[in-house]
Image 1 (cartoon, rainbow, N blue to C red):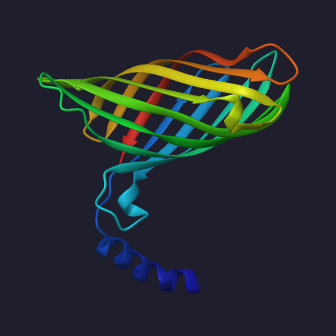
Image 2: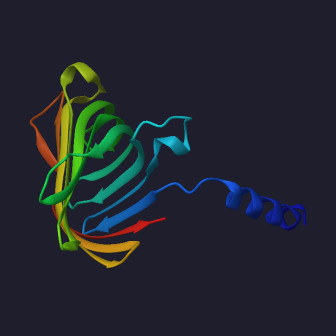
Length: 193
């Protein structure tokens, strides 16, 4: 009963908050599903600096390997200044942890992302990211780790896109040879709030 009394208060409070750009990215293939929520750093901290936070997870149920990965990252973001395209990019750091059949561990990854839109064709886009955790920044059973992805999207609505992409998550464990924990094409959706 108390919850119903609080709903109008919560609705008014959320309406009074400044609008902040946030997005939800969900993608899958026949062996893996990945989700990521991202938003403006200014929604977490009192700052005018352009930036983004990310919270995400990946689950893969490959016939040879079960994998669970979570991550949280902070990026400095902005326009690249390109003339003929609308291009934004970000550079930052990400904390990540994974649990796989071959062991578990995590660390800090350095990396970045980009989003390119052609002038006159803003509904079509090309995105990508790359993250790398060197040995000096990892712990547990992980020697080093890298993850990258490229995708092409079509903006169906102003706040919703569908895309096809390719992702590779490569792990080098302490006790074995490097292997691709997730590697392949995926279909995804991006929603902006």
